[in-house]
Amino acid sequence: GDSVTQMEGPVTLSEEAFLTINCTYTATGYPSLFWYVQYPGEGLQLLLKATKADDKGSNKGFEATYRKETTSFHLEKGSVQVSDSAVYFCALSDPGNQFYFGTGTSLTVIP
Amino acid sequence: DTGVSQDPRHKITKRGQNVTFRCDPISEHNRLYWYRQTLGQGPEFLTYFQNEAQLEKSRLLSDRFSAERPKGSFSTLEIQRTEQGDSAMYLCASSADYFAADIQYFGAGTRLSVL
Image (cartoon, one colour):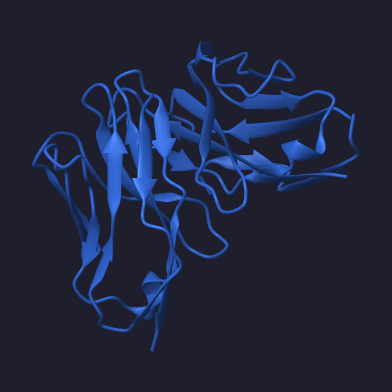
């Protein structure tokens, strides 16, 4: 079945460091791919998405590119801030509108 | 606040009791989803509705779990004869199939503790 595997955390970075959180997926069809973020004490919210191969999703300085050849959707940010501290979830939706989430990666950014 | 609302936020129950959770989606959203999230894991899809129709329920965890959305607005998730393994966060999300159907908006969740 479809699934998402993402890099385990926790990840701790200094402010202004470069961030990469790896995500790979397994899908039988052509899924849409997402990154969701959960800030402390809040619900999940969409960070970015990509719906087809080679699409790049971007938001708030974060980017991820849908790579069909490597079945990956890695999240990157060039310079993280303390306010980026959160749990990040990679997810896919299949053509039947079912969603599959990764286990989440906790990020802590220290000043 | 016009976001997804879940009630209650916390529920403590004894093993064997039935519990029911409510979700009120964003008012113009016709799709509604239920998930379970256990500690250290991502949300696990349970079921979803389009309007009042339950389009997918094969991933409900057992026959003790059931969900309804009788008028296509709010939804309830019921767990019968709760077990300690049911302790988790239960999340609801909604989306609109006429616009960006794959973008879900999540509620804050209901945390269930089964003693």
